Image 1 (tube, rainbow, N blue to C red):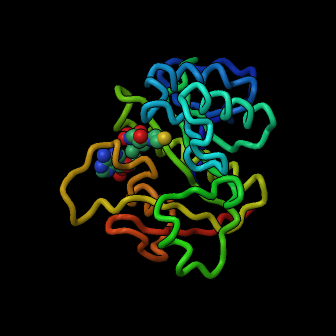
Image 2 (tube, helix red, strand yellow):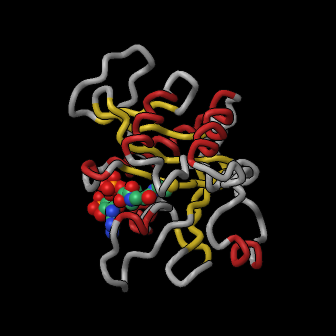
Length: 204
Ligand SMILES: CC(C)(COP(=O)(O)OP(=O)(O)OC[C@H]1O[C@@H](n2cnc3c(N)ncnc32)[C@H](O)[C@@H]1OP(=O)(O)O)[C@@H](O)C(=O)NCCC(=O)NCCS
């Protein structure tokens, strides 16, 4: 994997340069500002859908509180991408226990032989910043974090791009297949018409 510019906490972010930080209690306000700018993302998901709690809170406010609680308890793995001081995107990752509610889970479980150590969950780039490498930076940084945490098999569940009409970014909340292919993932199996399980091993 290429080296990625990731300043330590306290470094001065440079305007125009993408940097990454983890979602923690300290960076929560930056994440919250991004989600609020995007009306909760998906009408108030607050990036809770893949977590064990799912949408059990039943409202955008409840989802916000549930996500904040997970972050404050230190049980969320999520890379935030910044330009200057502004958080403009993210990539969620975690163990299968942390992110059990993947899309097409029944099809996934039907043929599963070995759970991965890690999953890539949802990816998001704020509207005006799309198409300039924010998602790539987020996933790349997540892979670096996974390496630092011991590595292992990593799964992603992206949407196929080739062989279909161009899709809006909203359809690619688990990423486009091309991005993961570029980052060394290969197809494992199909779990929906356009969704694949893709895998790669990350060495520590
Ligand atoms: C899908 C999404 C994450 C891509 O983010 P992005 O920052 O624009 O992506 P990048 O610029 O890093 O592009 C990475 C690669 O994906 C490809 N890609 C991105 N959007 C694509 C699209 N709509 N169709 C096909 N390929 C796409 C790019 O071509 C690029 O590959 P390249 O560098 O070889 O050209 C973004 O469109 C998005 O946030 N969509 C909404 C997803 C969502 O709702 N998430 C929240 C769920 S809770």
